[in-house]
Image (cartoon, rainbow, N blue to C red; front, side, top):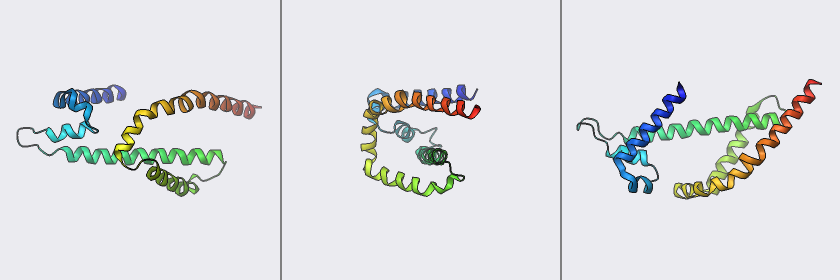
Length: 146
């Protein structure tokens, strides 16, 4: 049910952006939802709703960073067989902050990098590493049963 509701919301957002902006503007904007919200005006009463989309964008980015950071800390914790994952939190987050500044200087560089990222990330992270991790997991599970 949640998948259906989320998919319907994404479809409505995409259709709204397409109808408000048109194809040329939709392709040429980096954040089409924010730009579409700047054009929205409902009866002269509800205006300037783009601030809500900006707040949602920032909060969702923060939530995503927190979840990824938590997952990396737990993964490194399991890799080194430590008892507490929070010992790795500060070093991992410092490395992440430094790399985020070094890799991309601004948002435009990041968006241009996303265009080639799919070709860089597909082979190692989506084709090569998952079978290797699966093999190691099966071996570890087989050793723990014996």
